[in-house]
Each structure stands twice: as structure tokens, then as C-alpha cells.
Length: 332
Ligand code: SAM
Ligand code: SF4
Image (cartoon, rainbow, N blue to C red):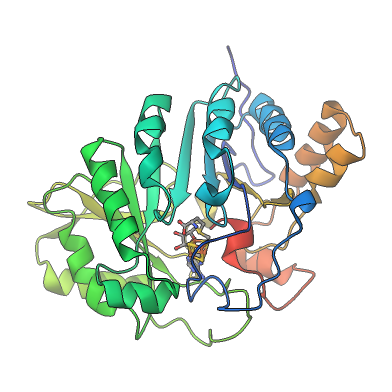
């Protein structure tokens, strides 16, 4: 079936949806959520599976072909596998990916493989159990590590996401690069962003993508630049003799906006056309007010036609000037 291409007002193709299936999480990562006092959304405010399917179907008609399920932690949502299977069946959706902290994931890996999951992004900031506990405020390192082992054993394409944090996991950068020696995985180092749910403890970005790169280069003289896939947010490199590769994501410096092909939908059904905006359309309320698919399509197209040029502009246009959201409500 021939699909239309969807473009924004800056001529950028849009084909990638990142959808948060829940705002709940079983970890409390320092950079994402406060340790205590989290106000989860009441369940009725979250998108139902039917609403998610309906939104993805409308977007697939418009030209979205790739979906990533994220959260919060996607695997805390009951019946996630059913949802994945249903999204895979939507006409026009070519590949479905999931981002997970890996704590609850291992028992589902065979099923994910059988369903044909395109890839799993595993968030892993350290290979040290003690530091894992300090960063995530939970003692679950072994479960996440086991998920990584099982993903490798089952041949599922893997990207590891590592947020680089001064004073927290700098000693892990080199050991994480070492994971690419024998395994064909991609380890991506991400600049820390201010979405920690507190609006505090984030004064200045210390580990910029350039500093991360310099640090890795000094330990691996044979590090070479490799081609970045189209619309990639990461700069890709490879230690010459290693099987896997690494990526560095300038998530705070925002150097990749010119080719950004992604939109986001939060767990409560808010459309974000940039990670740094604070929501441009409440799709859930449109559905619940009985708006037709045609009406919703028009509203979506309007939003795609009024997209900020980049993350700096999106941040400047926010209604709430200070960023106090947690990444767990956005999905990363
Ligand atoms: N719970 C899942 C997980 O951790 O993989 C999915 C949701 S999590 C919000 C998605 C991604 O966002 C993770 O890779 C996480 O490391 C990243 N993330 C969360 N807060 C961040 C922040 N303040 N800066 C940079 N990345 C962040
Ligand atoms: Fe949970 Fe993922 Fe946020 Fe960590 S990064 S608190 S695992 S949602």
C-alpha cells in the first residue's frame, strides 16, 4: 500500500512516533524522577489501549511508520505484549521498538522476539551494582544485567542508553565502550537533560557531547567516525577492531534538530512535536469528546505545520517557562 510522506513546516519528514504507555516506573533514576513525592496520574487519565490504537492508526494513515513504546517503564503496564502485538498489526506501521530499564523485561524476551520487535533500547548507566543503586535508588542491577544477557542471546538488536553524569558514572564510560568489543551492540552516551521532575540539581551541563567524545578518544586511539543513519540523533563512532559501535547524543546541546523526524505522545495523550515543548495538542481529550478521526487528523496536521524550528525555539515558546516535568511522563 502506498503511504503518504508527512512533512512539517520546515520540510522535515515526520515518520517516527515515540509513545509513553505509562508514567509509572519501578526505578527512581536520579536524572529522571525525584526520589519521593511523585504524583502519578490517576489511571483514568492514561490513554487506554483502545485510544492508543486509534491514535496510532490515524498517525499511520498520515505517514508514521515507526513506533517506539516507552514510559515510565513500559513493562509495568499490564498486558504490554498485547499492545505491542496490536500496534504491529496496524496497517502502515513497519517497525515497533521498545525502551526499557530492563528490570521486568527478561521474561518477555522470547515473546518479543517471536512478535518481531525491531529493537530494544536498554537503559544502563553503569556496570557497577553499587553505582546502579545510587543512580536508580533501587537495588535491581542483576535483573537489568540479565536482560542484557538474554537480549544478546536471543539476537535482538540492542542499543544501550547511558546518561552521562558528573560524579555519578564517569568511571563507567570506558567499561561500557568495552561492551562493544565482542558484541554487536550500540552504546549511546546521552547528555543529561533537565527533565528530572524537580526543576533543580541541574545548573550547568558538565558532560557535553564534545567532552564525552574527548574522554572516549583518549582511551581508544583507534576510535573512528562511522556514518550516521538518516535522522539519527546520535553521532556514531566505532573502535576500529570492535564489533559494536557507540553513539553520542547531544540531547541538551540540541545539534540534531535540523533532521528531527519524531513526534511524541505522553502517557496522558498530549502531543509534543519537540522534546522541549510542553505539549501542543491534547489528543486524548479530542478522542474523549467524540471528535472524528477526520477532525483529529486536521488538528494533528495543524500541529505538524506549526512545529518549532528546533529545541531552543520550542523551549522559548513553552507556557511553563521552568522545566519541571519528569522524563517519565515524556518517554525520553
Ligand atoms: N523507563 C524506561 C527506561 O529507562 O529505559 C523508558 C523511559 S526513560 C524516560 C527513556 C530514556 O530517557 C532512558 O534511556 C533514560 O535514560 C532517558 N532519560 C531520562 N531522563 C533523562 C534526562 N534527564 N536526561 C537524559 N536522558 C534521560
Ligand atoms: Fe524510570 Fe526510565 Fe525514568 Fe529511570 S529513566 S526513572 S527507569 S522512567
